[in-house]
Length: 134
Image (cartoon, rainbow, N blue to C red; front, side, top):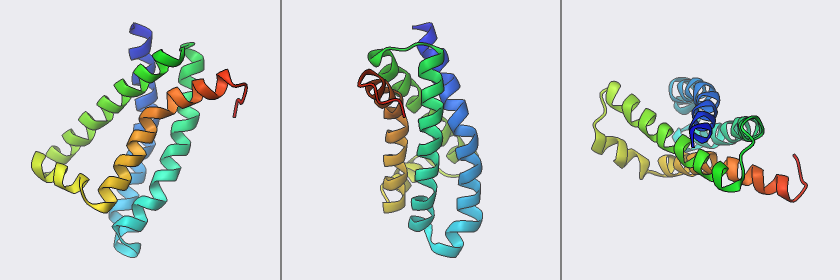
């Protein structure tokens, strides 16, 4: 289980750092220009592409099977949600306000991307088993 947690932590860091930077760009510059929903729609595919590459590296590095990769994704998702919640609180948003924001259309699109991030390691192991190493 230790290697699953190490893989999850590495995966989370590899994706969260650039996603955080993209989130700053989205929030401060892109959303005021094109709107919140369009800005999230621009950001999500970029973060999912980063997730794909980071998942490949982590799954291969720690030699995870399908179940372990699913656990890795779940752990990384938990870290992501805790970090997002912590950042919301740090920047003056209440827990309730953070949850309400998740229920907006841009919030749901972002959450769908985060679920994609969580599933990426499992998806990658599935593709490996089928011989489709992308």
